[in-house]
Image (tube, rainbow, N blue to C red; front, top):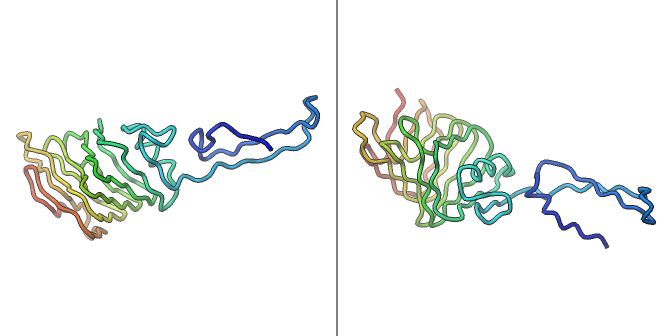
Length: 193
């Protein structure tokens, strides 16, 4: 029986690991076993080892999660910059927590510009700051299964803070639930020009 105490998944989920077993303690390798870490189907920020409940943890999780995997917030999350999805296919489960964006103007706080994102929440949601929209899509697919999406309050600019913003001629948006409100803008706005 051999025990591996290192959490290989959290250490580097995309790497292979090898264990070299010596037969008699002399250092001569009797057998080499290749170990592949289990794929990450669910990451809970602040709980899953290696994934903090902050900007860095979310961005790392978005890179490491497998297709159709779920990233869950482990508490309220305040970002320091906008979050853009450009590839992958995963679920962002807000639960009862609030995702507060860190943007300053124009594109929404959580912006789908490729890939497929599903956002779900029970009582949580996304809040924009500085007259910025909460969530938007330009390319890829966005599915919303619940939550509250509120654009940021006025900052004196002409940029509205909408709940949901569409930036494509034919945006791929599926709404299965959710509440949308504008801070200074509209609940849902078609922003394609």
